[in-house]
Image (cartoon, rainbow, N blue to C red):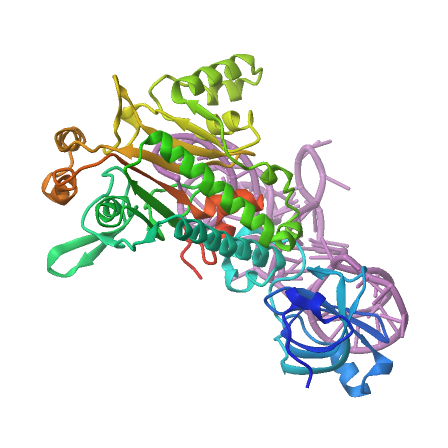
Length: 447
RNA sequence: UCCUCGGUAGCUCAAUUCGGCAGAGCGGGCGGCUGUUAACCGCUAGGUUCCAGGUUCGAGUCCUGGCCGAGGAGCCA
């Protein structure tokens, strides 16, 4: 019996009889000839059935196979540049076909454009479409590349808790859940504080998991549940942190370009920009960025844009600022040394300039904005305690965190990278809701 | 929370500045076609025009209120 193959490896089987386990994605009926586009999860391949080659009854069934019917197709692999598919260029001359289940006729997703609400309502089926399939395979490749780099560079994976007793950073809104006699617990918005404990045992660690923000954000860059990788490094300052970040990001982009060429091509992604992603990345201080934005603002004629770009020293950048800044570069850009007042309480002050802290954000090019936020952390217990009080945070809840600075404190730093934003940049897609299998947004928890 | 836009067939949309018979393409069904790339051609079925009021001889269209969604701002990764 012919072997079952994976469509992404079809080039290994030219002129051989093979079987494919899959689903009918599309059908074109031309009388005595039927084209089936079959997907097997690994790729999409065209299968060609001629009336003369097949039993009359079977051929008749093939001419009316509904979209999404599950099938086992047997046939000979042949190279043909006309053949569509992913990776494409090969097709199957059908010699036999078994129908496992004919799909119901009311499959909702036509091979046409659909509205956002409609495809989101049918996310469980939308996943089968080529664009979604490609994006989520890139996501998986990206996660694998990320773990590969960390595991190969001395980082150890430490899982941090999802149920937490209090706000990690005390600012943003948290999801709350009842918790036995303790009253309430909160869904985590970062594993960082726990990782700061972990580095004193393991030196270099990373956590990777879901994080939750109950912000009422309603933009293409926000989800209420998203995934973040958070490396944390002992004996590391801000400068070293930026070197780590650029190595890390460059490795991920390079690996995805190597491993997902067919997926990126099927998304129509121009990869020439991604190919330029290699160290070093430009480093711009917050002060310089403010100056650059002033110039850009003075030069623009568009009054609305002028308004959006208005900025005082001391405030954080909004999305319009990030877009303008990154458009000046063809690589990701570091912006470091943000004002202390717009950043979290645990960031190390800049030497001699307490109004600035040793923080760094990495902004992706092509308008994708912030994908990484990181900083050197405060290592002095007295200063940390002072900052806690300035931010009105309860000392008791953070006692363990202060303890870390009492028993062999060292300079240390870390960052968090948003997986969905990074995938959306690499894939070149507009909205991050497509970069996670089942997105959670402010007004959607179904399916 | 604020600003802007939208809701008509299963889907994507149209329905004449200024109220006058509810339409098309895709998808479904039936038929035709040996190289299709969102195939094409013919026939066919398919409607609570988001909801509730109001104006009018007459409302998909105008008015009031509500619901739902999208894009953006703020917040953030």
